[in-house]
Image (cartoon, rainbow, N blue to C red):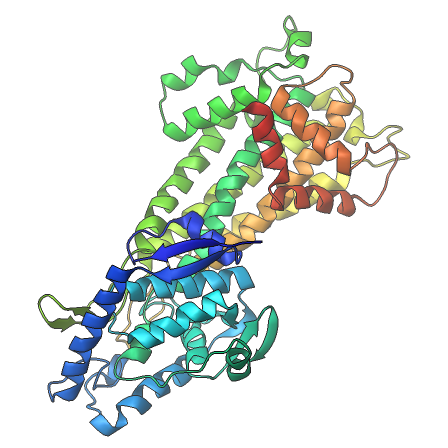
Length: 508
């Protein structure tokens, strides 16, 4: 399969392009104008390094040791020692897609021309991406101020032939992985180590893939909710445009419009036009308001990420036009930390309301359907424990939704006295997204079972397309079986994108 080509210039990288590279579906090249900026900033760093004026991270120590002058003969050792000493990550390595995204994002920041990296060092990073040399980066160890120091140090280890890397998916010592790809490590010169470890790219790598997944799950929540609504013979009236025009939150209006497309052409809605029920429960009636609020949160997070992935987050920054190398605080991850907390909370709301819809489906006092959607209930437990599993996932998601962005723990002898916990927020959000996917898979399963009881009358065209796809993989449950296999089958339809693509095709 041929891969797409993405040109990076430090300013225009899109979240969807990051996903392409994360999936190893695209090659990356440096834009000519970016290459010129990189050369110019490096020339300024070389001039400063050759002089005697103290410049942070070029000829001084780091953090609280910024006042310690370093002899010119020791500048290479200074940069190497920085990488070695900061590679303190622990825990499970980032999955390959996140690690690829991390390497891409670091390249994009370096391409802005404010880092002082040498062109050949950036060239190695780009070659690693294109030849599938992916650093092994433990996911724990960042407090998110001075950036993601530990994760980025593990990334940088591979540049100097240390640490470990995956080559075409195989985990190897870094030097061996580079050799198999036809690459050689570099010897870091003045400021280069610092240019590789300052920034928010780890939290942004995890956060970008989380963001794109969350946006998909928001659409899938509408699909699952529509199937449930039809299975419960719910009303379509709460989704009419007039209601949402008078409370014009964009997310709410978008959700209502999406629900109308999914439910269009329903035969089931015609069967209960004159029923005695006046109102549906909130978990059905208020989908635009709740799902819409989640969309608003995700919209905020997207805006933050789109700015951050194209921002200069080094310290110090190299400004060639004024010939100044200035220390600041762009590495601080507070914007991303807050955004990732919002993503986690938005997803938790989607899973929470989904679990309540599952309760509506399995509770015969609420649904008018067989108890727990089981034929011969009593002998069969049906979907009883599927609802319990959903409840367990929601409960844990609520715990994980406690914000990391309001937390801080001082580090570096008090110099770094307020930190963002941005990586923590991103990792929590990633876990919540897994739970939300599973909750939606459970709802889709239960809703499909409910729709079986409504046959031969059909739901709206989008709900019908989802139902038919699920039934092509998972049969109706006549008697109890291992439900975890069914949950996994629907989860795969969600993760592959097939379920949402099928619905979109049916509602286009």
